[in-house]
Length: 162
Image (spheres, rainbow, N blue to C red):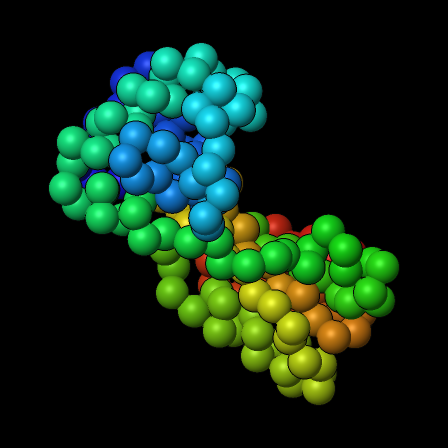
């Protein structure tokens, strides 16, 4: 978040708000169209509500961030936590450096080459997540024998399949 220099606990509070995909406008926090009181955001972010309010004011004071936070919306539901109940396969890839291009494309190709359809791809933003990951949810279980193929992709540090 260029141009925004939160201090102290507001750094964590601001990241938590963004990670929760809440938008912020008129001094209030929203998740899509549902207003979330600063006290609740603070509780989840493990910061005081005043830190949340202070962060909101700082965002409102920055024209670029104000626009971003007013229009950001949730990307939708993640199937990751319910994949096992739906008999879906999940591969979670931890990059060496999330800025290395091609990790998503090459990982998706590995799955597609096994004639497995990908239902969902979730890529954590490296500016918003301290440990970004690529999560691919597939139509069927991921065969264990393709794990070494993922590890050969440039930039991949670790692979978990479940």
